[in-house]
Image (cartoon, rainbow, N blue to C red; front, top):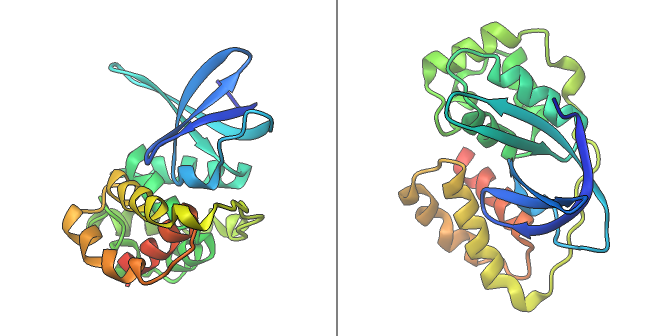
Length: 199
């Protein structure tokens, strides 16, 4: 089982990153790939969770150790798979998530793709008192992108929202609001898009 990997990010897509470690390229699914940046001169640490099933061996990556811990707690809940857990973590609002669990806020949790009322209640039941130490968001990635990349960044963010499981109709519905903002990084567009979808 992997704990973390140190290497270079060589590719970013809406659903995953490719990380080069000692000559091997690892495909790593992550909640928000755009928190990372392609830079073969820079070594980054990605916290890894390895999922083994009959049909596949998949790697899930996290920017922080606490994010990985929260992911592991989420997938231990009946009805929550890795894709749903990534969608929940994509908003990077751990404080909001922890508060929703503490306050038994089913409505907040059902706004995530793949989480219905029954699953939201299960999350609350299973994780009450188990996530209080994971409420701090820690350092955020600081990714600077040239302003002429604005449209590409927006399109990448929209693709990432769809990859997380949000319906295409909902994503298209917020596109106009996102397009009003200019000069944002893909990460910023994605964060803003998640906030709009959660309201």
